[in-house]
Image (cartoon, rainbow, N blue to C red; front, side, top):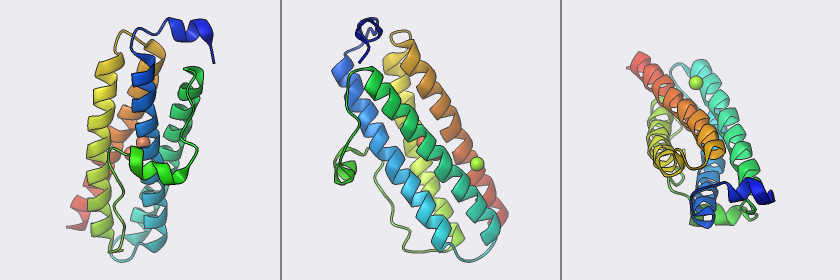
Length: 159
Ligand code: FE
Ligand code: FE
Ligand code: MG
């Protein structure tokens, strides 16, 4: 834990740690939803959908790493128990029980829309008050916006 690194943060650090851990739970659930979705996907444009879902899964895992590193810097502990993901999550988990490519795309678009709202809220909270978290959240938000648009475009090509 960085003493001065945490002192310069001009927001309630415990509150921020709570939000970062909730986002961390979202990222792990999003990672698995994409990852397993890519495994079970069936139907039209399967290869392209699998490639996109796999790419997004990797992005979500990278986001989880960025959040966990920042949580550690701020003197917190990243969620240690996977079963806690369900208690912390903002965006939940959509079981890909319908493996059709269109259904998977729709589920993941919903997830991205939720993620965009979550990160936009955290960004408002830290803006000008914690520049390091601000930079991390800005980078993640940019990816989530790209994810939403990528999935929407593939869905449009499908229909
Ligand atoms: Fe993400
Ligand atoms: Fe995403
Ligand atoms: Mg993409």
